[in-house]
Length: 161
Image: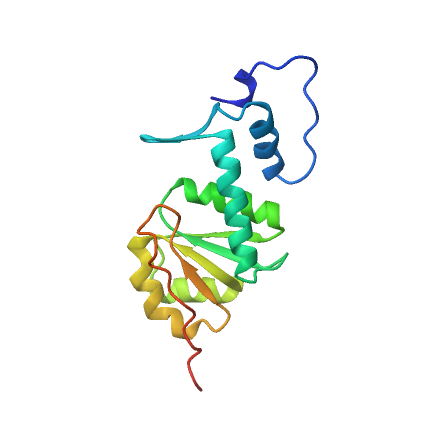
């Protein structure tokens, strides 16, 4: 379902602001309409807006500030969209990383982009754990919501030397 299929009265209002404003707009206008579907999973506009709000608050709670980078390393998943929307809403920068990179390339990209938080799919957690000591600026690694909740890894100390 696209926003064009939702019946409204009168002219469409202009949606100003970041791209997360579109989600908030449709969550107010058609909260129970389907906004997103991935396989058997589906989210209404209200659910998507709620997930984005919670993720924005969680990232801010980790100390992420406007302009700082959030890296995403996973195969195609709705979490990519949620992170992009939360980043826009919080003024953060979402950096999607190619999951096909070799560990040394991944280390370089994570270090070079300056990510302070990485959202890492369970499939890639062990690779990130191995290179983590070389990533002094990466403060937090989390798995996307819905993937083995609770396997959050605290910041590893930077390698000495």
